[in-house]
Image (cartoon, rainbow over all chains, first blue to last red; front, side):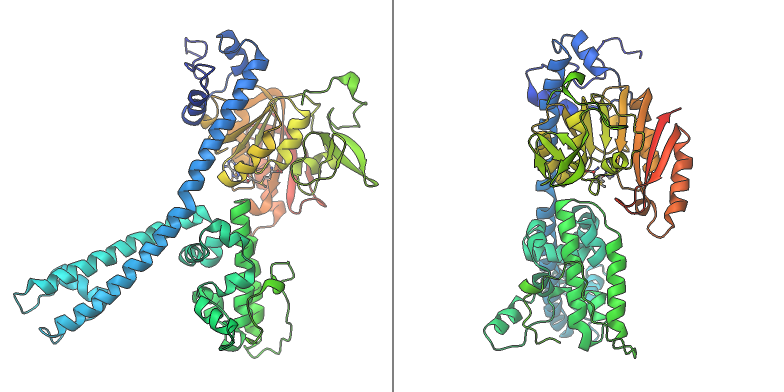
Length: 309
Length: 222
Ligand SMILES: C[S@@+](CC[C@H](N)C(=O)[O-])C[C@H]1O[C@@H](n2cnc3c(N)ncnc32)[C@H](O)[C@@H]1O
């Protein structure tokens, strides 16, 4: 090494051995491509009296550094996602409501007025002019277009961030639905603790309470309805498809929360299961009512009342 | 726990390092180390069973691969997760550096590490050794790698800089992490071929029945 100071490049260089925070910060932030015999160098430089003391300090400093990094990561991730998806929904809903108002109003001065956020964008960008000096309509159009842009940006954030917060859930459900489930449950940890029967009806709470009060059939599915596995299945079998999907989502949420490891096999398992279910209505006589058989299907805690099949 | 001296420990069993023994738990002989329990494993006094179904290194030892581990050595462990295996390693080895890049399992790793004064947790990416080269000492006696991510051979090559010339790489390769769709045998051939850029392969063995589609490899730097 060409470094002259004997400790150069070591995490302890310039660090006071009694200053735990400084040591932890150096561990987190310093870089060094070439390892050296740090214990010997640390003792040689007087950082520690002997190897034993060096390792004792290293233990404290690495532990402190890892704790700080873990807490930071935990704070940053799923809470941010929950806020982002809720804000995205609010922006979209508000933009659509205002766009309706805009269409009605613009229709009074322009017989060819369009509808929706797209029409607001056309007005806001000046691709279309209204036959009036009234700035109020154009100003409303700008507001709608801006809200639409905000919603798009939030959606991009959600699509980018969900796979790091909940990789398995994101790959199974798609990032936006995954983020919605996390949001409805109130966080990834809460979602990971929910039985699959509850996940199946998340987002259908109104229908579920009506059912529990005895005036309605139990809902077959909540927000997971938007997933192709459910929507693409014949209505007669949607309850089974929703149950199978919810079972895999429950496993994915648990793996994401408790280990963070990728389990790419979950996707294949879901596809197989859904194909089997769809085959029942596809002219096949398949009578194979297979349970996932992996313990995912918490039938005992299932929120369904059994009227869905 | 201090490394036991030879006098305190019965002769180690075949290829097992000092500090790892085959002991009876509820009538079955199992691998065991001495230390605080971590994952609900059965204990017997100071000893705790090491479940080879939950640990690739445990499986390599159970399958009697020649790991070259003798007890008391310095170890760089890549892919420590919640600390299941690395806690056993810290029970019999010397200074043990545990690298894991996912924050959530690292929280558990911290817990497993708390009663183990020579287990050093590092939240870092094993593909970027320069982010821990200022902490992990040079010339470690063993690198244990279980990262289950694409590019497992590259991770081993990148970390070769830490390994002593006489040291051992103990690598578990998960076929599915490289390519879910390919035949494991083909994946393993490719991984071994890449590894040979920096390592001489001493032993390879599939880890069945403990782990499906995993290959255990013992190698030394070339
Ligand atoms: C199969 S688990 C390890 C289990 C652990 N070795 C045991 O037996 O207790 C694989 C771990 O490697 C981690 N990992 C994957 N890629 C990594 C990388 N580039 N750097 C560090 N850790 C990584 C994952 O987060 C996961 O926790």
